[in-house]
Amino acid sequence: MKYDVVIIGSGLGGLLCGNILSREGYSVCLLEKNNKLGGSLQTFGRKGCIFNTGLNYTESLDDGQILNQYFRYFGLIGKLKLRKLDENGFDIINLPSGRYPLAMGHENFRETLLKYFPEENNGLTNYLETIRTICSSISLYNLSDKPFNIMECNSLGIGAADYIKSVIKNPILQNIIAGNNLMYAGHDKKTPLMIHALINNSFIESAWRVVDGSHLMINILAENIIRNGGTIHKNVKAEKFKTENGNVKSVLIDNGEEIEGKYFISNTHPEQLLSMIDGLKISNAFSFRMNNLEDTIGMFTLYLVFRKDSFPYLNYNFYHYNQDNTWIVGEYNQDKWPQMYALMPTATSKSESYAESASVLTYMHYSELKKWENTKTGKRGDEYLQFKKEKSKKLLSVMERQFPGITSCVDAYYSSTPLTWRDYTGTRAGSAFGLLKDFNKPMESVILPRTKIPNLFLTGQNTNVHGILGVTISSVITCSEIIDIRHLIGKIRNA
Ligand SMILES: Cc1cc2nc3c(=O)[nH]c(=O)nc-3n(C[C@H](O)[C@H](O)[C@H](O)COP(=O)(O)OP(=O)(O)OC[C@H]3O[C@@H](n4cnc5c(N)ncnc54)[C@H](O)[C@@H]3O)c2cc1C
Image (tube, rainbow, N blue to C red):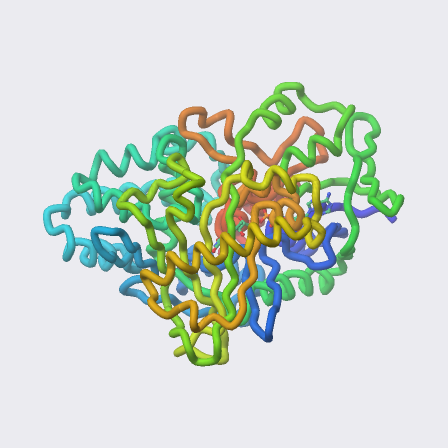
């Protein structure tokens, strides 16, 4: 059978493109290599607890805010149960010099930090004005139907850390403002102000957890595609494209089948896309760029199962740093690991008082995993299991200092490394957020959805900004290569 659109990968980007295009009457076929849909939105269960993997909290979901409107269009509002984090401190930044809340609402954010840094009124006002202006200047963050071109954003060429230093005088406050930069693997010498602004501004608007697991979001999005007449295949790995007259004609999958389409959308890491179009018409510059682009660092995640009613449910994320510098990636030091961690309890409908489980995230350099590079999930051997156990214990021992007794609340723990991510999502070297955007080379580090092959497009975190809002917008940008952007934005606005 020939489909209008074949989508490779069922991460959020693939699922959302499938939703948009099937709703517009295109016959859609979605291919996923895993036995579970969702890519980084997958959850897993242990001892009756749900663990989120790549969606711990999300943003701008109050009525009238940007992700709320996109989620309405995708049929998620009203079906997903969401819990708003603490308005007076959705993120707590814990430094040796003190514990500081990041509050929701721009005014509340400013007023809360002014209690600790009363001399920084002008700096905080300027900072908030800047991040708001950056967001309002980017069309799809405001549902304006002007063409979206990430390369036109001046703030892509400005360093986030440099900008913060230029408006905020107090070094501790400079670091607090960037205190949740794990959410974008912030690098003080590389991260563009645009990335920081889009993510921070959206979380300051409002921050939420999905209750009972992010797989519920996947289920709704997959059901929508099926209801619109689309087809979804799991356990199917796309391996190679076949071309005809300069266009992709079909994709070959690992069971030997060939699936034909009019348009093809890849939700995979661009390097993987390149390997699939090996030998076909694609610009050498694109290949060169792809093979030389850096990826964001990967994560080690510790998944904790708590004994019943033993550890409080924290309605905030707790970012701990061993030092007052919160820009860890550039200073990553294996001997000092973990230099920071973020504790993010899972929101469940069973209790709002006690946490059933939690994820603890910290960075991990791929070089530490090199010796297991050629192994597959579940078959890496005892040495790897021992490595993970030691890392888990080390992380827990650091957490004991901020949460005395936490170890005794833990019934069981599990962990994942960048290798786990590499094998589940196909990101290069298990990178957390895909390609790294670098303000020193803003144009080179941005990948657009359009390729040199007219009917082949990219979507997902590599083509815009990562994260739930970033990938949602990326799916709209990708689909606007196939359908009229004004028509689509009109529908989203009126949802
Ligand atoms: C540890 C961690 C925590 C995070 N926490 C948050 C958070 O709290 N909030 C937030 O907003 N964001 C968070 N993120 C980021 C967010 O999860 C991602 O940016 C987003 O989900 C990426 O979606 P995507 O569509 O780009 O693709 P992915 O999720 O990477 O999915 C790609 C899909 O393509 C499939 N695939 C790959 N190759 C093939 C092939 N050849 N054939 C078929 N299928 C293929 C993969 O199996 C996968 O399902 C987190 C990320 C990480 C790593």
